[in-house]
Image (cartoon, rainbow, N blue to C red; front, side, top):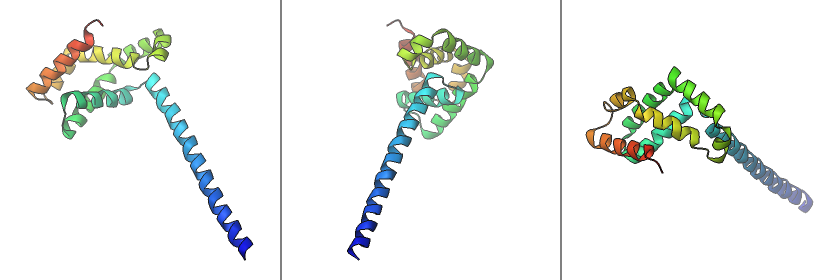
Length: 144
């Protein structure tokens, strides 16, 4: 009887340790795949990332966040930005590996200078937020 109880306890402990190992492995795999997404972002990923950044800097409401993210993604799916992302990724592979945000910042800077984007953005955010956005763009584009 004691032997059966011990076997059940050991089996129970063993199953927990396997479960913990699986979770660690999954976490590592997710981390690696998210790093790969950062290295070669698509319009959706880059749009979400930039939407979150703008939400933080501009104190966007939830509705504004979703609208701004959709606007960014819409523009990034356009031919102009698709070509830009492909060119930057192929021409600057070494820099991207050194700085995971190189491509993201370059493409975002180009997008944020786009008058069509800025005009559409101004219909989503208020004047104070637009001023903060303009300051952010000015700081982003100034030489460091």
